[in-house]
Length: 294
Image 1 (tube, rainbow, N blue to C red):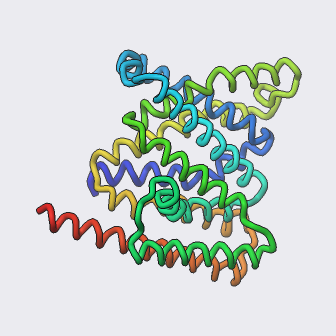
Image 2 (image 1 turned 90 degrees about the vertical axis):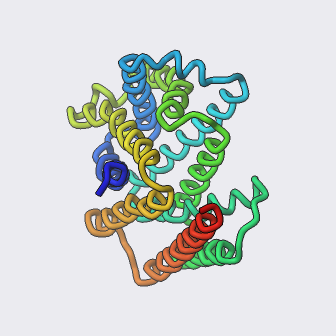
């Protein structure tokens, strides 16, 4: 197993354990957890930028107002995604949050059609259709639309779309995104502290420690993922991306005993088949392109 595969595995395994981490933060409302996550992440990234003497590189990479606007949008989408995810985990919808990241690749394909006017190949249409059928089946079975899963998939899909237009890598990109939100989030947390409503310093020692460590927990897997992306193929990354939602799904069912009926299993299986179809189609296209360019 090469270093790139190990880096990717490390990133996905850390993400896979997120439900346990954020469930332990049940004393803190989701919006405070997200604010702490942004503040501590930026502080950690700022230290790394200083240690590596790369502030000038980051400033030089910011080419103008258009790029800042793109990153403001991407930072808001990322914060919304984090907020929905942490709310879902704390409210006991871990299985549904895992569903959001299972269907995310299919939502990204659909966004490519709607926004970028990309043309889908027949098997891609089949995969999207199967996913829609699975979500419809789960909606009927649940008795309500799985909005947590759909919003997670949509916000992360739009986040990926915004990042598609940016030349910055994951490290610089996350530094800029958290930097843009740092002052508002810090101001919000300081206001809560002044009103006696802040959790930090007024809860258990474990909660205080976990809030501080939301910075490393956020930055480390992203840095590992960025390193992996430079060392292994996108095909391998695409195949490994399902490690995290699979772990989260198993944690929700086996550790937290969330209800998961046979009807739920049928709906998930339809979506899993759609993912297999999408991956097989992508791999075949990758092989065809390689054969032509070889």
